[in-house]
Length: 622
Image 1 (cartoon, rainbow, N blue to C red):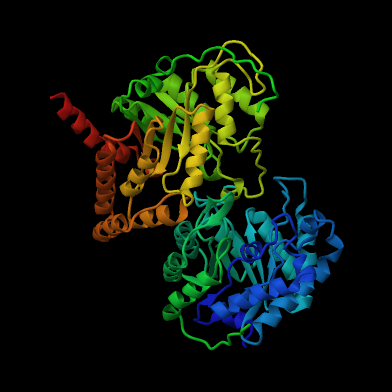
Image 2: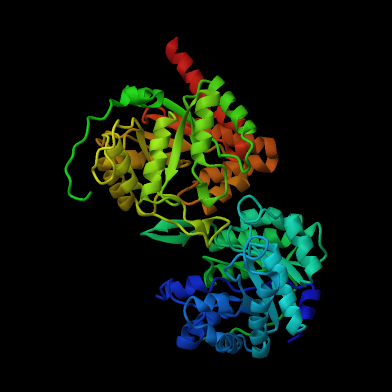
């Protein structure tokens, strides 16, 4: 087998393996264990995963050493085993690889902040990386891969550390969010330029997002560097299934995007979180026609007991304009707009003014959707209320605040005139640009609904009176397309018992699925407000279907978007709006209202969806 430096130079597209952690978790290894220590404690488990990936067609195996640096191992009290863990990992990967598959020594982030964002000096970080690189070198890897780094400065120190101890080729991969930036705000162009200058032989991206986001980012990177590009996306974004976060992008979807990534210049392709040997096998079959062949060998193998009823809650119709329309059975309308990324709200407020001028009832304000960094939803809601004079529907989640903080926030909202709430549990931090950020989750959306219901009676969560009662209109989320609909309906029933007064759904593209859901809850007397998303293109439809938790785009809609998008961008936009209008017309008589999203901030598209509703209202008047 040729040296890896020659592999970098040849014309072949090489296929990495997929996720190690996903496979080990599927084998019953709890997430609170040190997966790197399994190289010594349960080597057969690790070896079996490696062999499955070789059987699937992987041409490069990563060692099970993502967290095998001193700082990460110290948290498990096994820092002194660093060298043994790394050496054992290389031995296991080499045993599975044989003579025809490369072995890449994996080095992940240190898990700390380095200067200027934290107390760790650059040289200290370099020393930590150097220690692991020495062990991987001595184990006999073919290449070292630095991966899932969010801080370019940290990646630079890792590259320099490898260069301090050996001449092995280096693949350096960063991780970005849905906004195409790292957690520290660096763009793909900045990533490519700095990693190139630092001496990486191959530059790339991995983890955090699915292949759709990486496709554009790779194109930006390849335009500013002559270095070869690597890409290892997640299998989409995770969805909650039976209390666990599961990655739902199919092998076929990953295979299709594998071809697109290669066409954009990717030479080293693989998978990260959620990918399995099944994904790698399909990706192998997809990329082979695009790559010169090389031979390889397949190896077989209740409150605190106090009972204070509090005061009688204010009637729903008196709490807000939004609540009044719901109480009277009038059709409510709202548009969801995402808060700005920076401190300037003017563009958002201009969009909100257009929404108000169009006669839409409210603006929905998400609270850190997909664990992204944006202006706080409470601040945005106050700005909308005070400057645009349109009612906001504030999404409020449990992820970031403890019970005390939530109680304080909500009292503040009441004082500032915020009346409409959509209570949600919140997306876990691992979905966003700060996967190591801590999440609170003192309670979930059911507990939060109960808490707000008590506040509307003038009581805190412990049943203690605090004075004048709040006047919130209480909404909750629901997913008609949940994989376990029985469980979703059970949770919705609990939310109703806790005090929910309306529910907004995930974006609905399959009206038959919504009809089935509505039939299941006949007699519940809970107003349902479906979410509608005007698709931008066929690619946007693929992204929504494969990478957005809880969303299902039926085949006929996918096909309509494909045909329209093939004709051009404007045709795709028109078809997306047409489909959204049809959905609105179809559900109009069976639901309490509708929430239309403004994809990529396109409020104009959301308002076009409502044009059909305006026509319907006009006809009804005449």
